[in-house]
Length: 210
Image 1 (cartoon, rainbow, N blue to C red):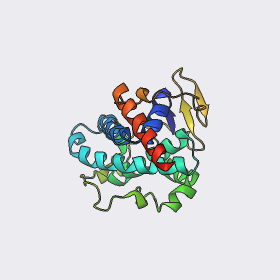
Image 2 (cartoon, one colour; image 1 turned 60 degrees about the vertical axis):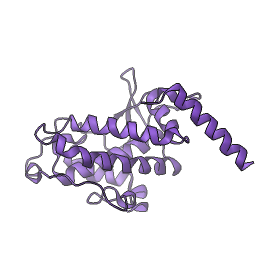
Image 3 (spheres, helix red, strand yellow; image 1 turned 180 degrees about the vertical axis):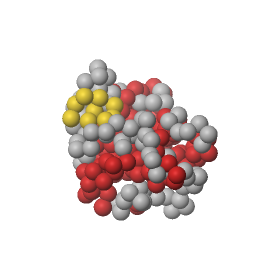
């Protein structure tokens, strides 16, 4: 898979790990991902899929953080969540939403097998242990599309590593180095006031820990 990576992604990573704005960042990122992939869906089915996509992407925020905690880079952790989403799209026959061809499903699974097996994620069960206790909303499938899959948004040939396209268009294997200084207000939906509140809460937590 080829994914984008800009300063906004590093800012979003920081936002997700901060108090106060962590939940705000999750809400904004879920909305963003749902809008992007609903925009790739068959227009006749896009709206009926939104509740499912909201629930699914909310769960993958936890898998993203778990991957970071396991030592994966920002790009790899984010790609893991995209691979999970593509498993889900495949299971529902939503092939027009997929980011890589059907024939690369196993290759993407194998590359992250250690992580996936740790959290009981499979192609058939793309959330594994990250499935919420009360589940996520269901949405109608289009299994007939699997007979002759068309995926106009998929790009093959990037299943062997993490391929990252930076803001200048250059494609790097493995991703960019994380900036030394990251401004959390570069994250989607995070204002300066939000950042100040998070810093205050973080300082209070450190004081209590001392």
